[in-house]
Image: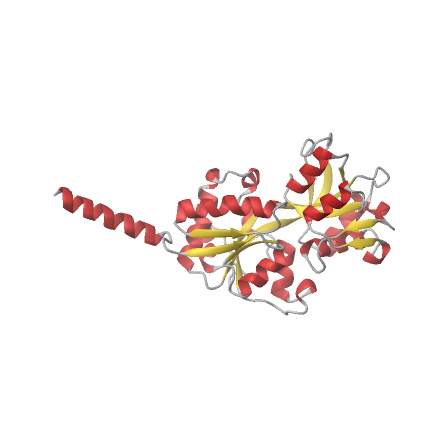
Length: 315
């Protein structure tokens, strides 16, 4: 009898693991090691493995566009991307004009706010307008950060030609600021961002607000932006809230992923979010997950949201 019970228990365990995706392996594209994508992705990957039995290999990448192209090439199955960049990919616009519309990925859900953070050590720079003629890092050419910077400059009545643009990663921007090789940098990531934390700890760096008429103009032309306050105390020396704008960090998945796997991943993220040991997990919500997305959701994610009374667009 004991032997029979042992066999039955083993079979039940095997079936439960199979249902949760045991044996499935996925690679998740994130971002640079100095950004929030990489740190959050590592925690999220472990959470998925623990709760779904899906092995997730988290890799550092050049960010949103690289992750979408990596999924399209079959190198990645999961990726963290900016909500504006996935909109460009779905439409074949801006940073995806050359590649055209990409239909090989689907949305799992929005994760957290990605603040457009303008950081400097120059006390003369108090507003976006003060960037005129300055050396400013605006991310890799064609990246999500690049287009965020272009959008902010345009809202201030400027173009890239009005600054001396530098195309650098988060970590390189921080090093260049410390070495006084550049005057300011756009860094788009969840706050606090490791690269900015290190910079504010080691030097007199601070955030420049993106607010008032500039923010209003930006929100009118680009609906995927919202206003956001980086709370006082987020960085060393920051004594007051800093108003800026934000896009949304979003988890996407390959269209080749099974409905069951994506359903289980979505459910694990939103029903067991207390097990995600990262500060940004506090921003997880069904509303945040399902609004402001200009690309279709995966059927597995849609199935979970439907159980919660939320209808999302699929394809």
